[in-house]
Length: 432
Length: 168
Image (cartoon, rainbow over all chains, first blue to last red; front, side, top):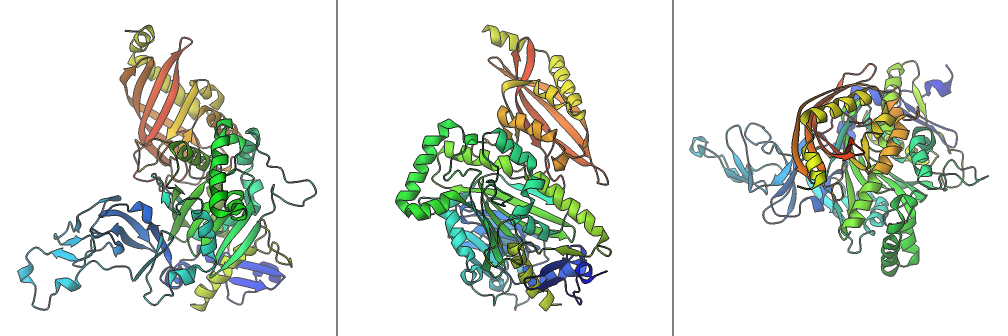
C-alpha cells in the first residue's frame, strides 16, 4: 500500500498535506470509540440547536426533543421565558413530560407524582413530610441545560457552562443566518407545522458532508434535474465554463467549523426568483415580493437574498438549506452507523396563504423523505456506510477536490468539507 | 337527489374494494403507468407528516403532496434506474382491509381502507408501513377514478421507515 491509500496518518483520522492531499479515515464512521469521543469533545461542548422561538408562541407551549443525547423540554414558561429543561425527574429519573408537544401548566412525574412548574421549579412532592430537614425543594427543580442562547430566534444549548457566547461561536455563520432571516419584512421567520423525522443507516457526519456537497448533484440527483428540465427550467451548465452545474458557486469557511455553499440560483426561490414550476400565475406575486426586498434592503442586498442559495452547516449538526425552499434540519447519532434526522420548513411569518403553499410545494420537489432528491441522498449515504464495512482494507476517503487551487473553492470542490473535518479533528483528535 | 349524486350513491362497497385491490396489485407489480390511469385528471396524492395527519398541505409541510403534474413526474422518476432509492425497485406487498364508504358528497365518494405495506430491500429488515387510506373517488367515463388519496401513517414518526420513496 502506498501512502495515499493508507493515509500515512500516524494514528490520526484526518490527514492533510497543504495544497496536496486531504484524507479522512473511514474508521471515523464506523468506530464506537470515535463516537464516544465525539460525544465528549463535540456534543458536550459545542452549541447544539434545540429549536426556534416560533415553535413556542404562548406561555406553556413546549416541545420535547433529543439534544446531544439528552431528553430536553424546550418550553416557554408561564411567565414567557424560553427555557431548556432536562426532562428527568430529580427524584428517580423518569422523563416528566412524555408528549411530543403541547401546552402545559406544569409537568408531573408519572412514577411518584413529583410535579414541576413550567420554569422547572419543583411544585409538589407527595408525602413531603417523610423527607429529612435538609431536603430543600428550591434546589430540586428540573435541571436547566447549562446554557441557552439564541441568535435571531434560533435557540441553541450548551452543556458546558464555560462555553463562549453563542454569537462568538457562530462567527461568520451569523451573516448567512441574516441572509435567511432577511426574507421576512419584519425579520421574523417561523417553523411551519409538520415534522419530517426519519433515520438514515449511516454515520451522522455523512449528512454534514452531503448537505453541502454539490459535486454529487449530477450523479445522485439526475432524476430531479430531469424533472426540472421537463418543467422548463434550464439546468445545463454554460458551454465551455468547465462547471458541473448551471452556475458558478462557492464553498466557504465561516470559522469555528461552520461552512456554507454560496450559489447563484438556477432552481427558483419562493423569495424571490420565479421559475416555470411555480406557474405563470405566480409571476406577479413573486415580482411583488422582490420589490419589497429591494425597497427594504436596496438592490444589492435584495439580490443577495433573492438570487443566491446557501446550504449552511452550523457545526456540528445543524443545517439550514436555503435553496428551493428553506429547511432547518438537525441530526444526531443513534450509533456509529445510524442517525436520526429531524427537519422542518421555515418561512417568513408574513407569507400569504398562496405564498406559503408555493413555498411548501417547492420544498417537496426536492427535500424530505418523499422528495425527488433526499431519498436518493439517503440511498447514497447508506451505500457509503455499507462500503465502510471494508474500512480495514479500504481505509481512507479522499477529500482533495480543489485543494491545489489558489482562488476561491467552488461549491463542487471539497474545500468547505475540509473546513468541517479540520474542526472535527481539532476537537476529537486533540481529545484522544 | 342530482343524477351525479345518485350515481355516486349507487356505488357499492364491493366496487370500491375491487378498485383498491386492483390498485394494490398494480403498485406491487410496479405497473405505475397503469396505476396513473386509475387516477382522475386532477388527482392529488398526499402523505401527511406523521405528527399532523389531518392537516392541509397548503399550510403544513407534508411528506408528499403531489398534484397530478408532479405525480406524473414522480412516476417518470420511479421508472428511471437513476432513482437510486428505488433501484433495484423494492419488493412490496400490500394488504388492504376494513374498506368502508364513509360518505358521498355530490359526485364524490369518500372511502377509507386500512393498509399494511411491506417493503423489502436486500440485506435489510422489512419496512412495515401501517396506516389508513382516505380516498375520494369519482365516476368518470363509466369508471371509478381516484381523485384524492391521503395515505396516513400510524407510526409516531417515520424513524426506521426512512424514506417514502415508492408509491404508498
